[in-house]
Image (cartoon, rainbow, N blue to C red; front, top):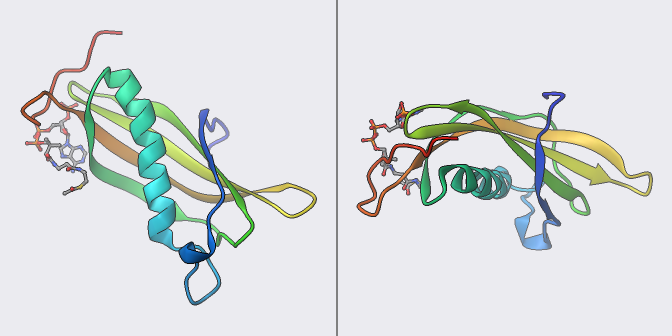
Length: 125
Ligand SMILES: CC(=O)SCCNC(=O)CCNC(=O)[C@H](O)C(C)(C)COP(=O)(O)OP(=O)(O)OC[C@H]1O[C@@H](n2cnc3c(N)ncnc32)[C@H](O)[C@@H]1OP(=O)(O)O
């Protein structure tokens, strides 16, 4: 996982309903938290509506367990004309010693949208 994790965007505790038959948290639930966190950062940078168009380099590094506190970090990695590549990293805080465990990472591409739901040129910095 990257050393530069970026901004802490979300801290969440998964519930019992997020557990699969292995006793791990569903990958889809984690993906959803990543999409939410990335979308918060992308929406702020785009100064408006964004939609997820692609997810690349998604990696599930280690299982997430019930009781983990999940922290989602995100930062801008690439800026195009209408799209932003947001790197999203997820870390668990686990156990009484509060150890940090890298869980997942990926690059989410968000497209800035106009009011017709079509791509919109990103604002100048
Ligand atoms: C289906 C769902 O509900 S998924 C959940 C939420 N997401 C959505 O609803 C989005 C559904 N998708 C869409 O509405 C459309 O694909 C849009 C509006 C996001 C993009 O429309 P397109 O016609 O593909 O736009 P266009 O070809 O102009 O590309 C727009 C930007 O997205 C980028 N892009 C498009 N597809 C991809 C892709 N697969 N990977 C990375 N970037 C992509 C383009 O490179 C371009 O970026 P740039 O302007 O910075 O160079």
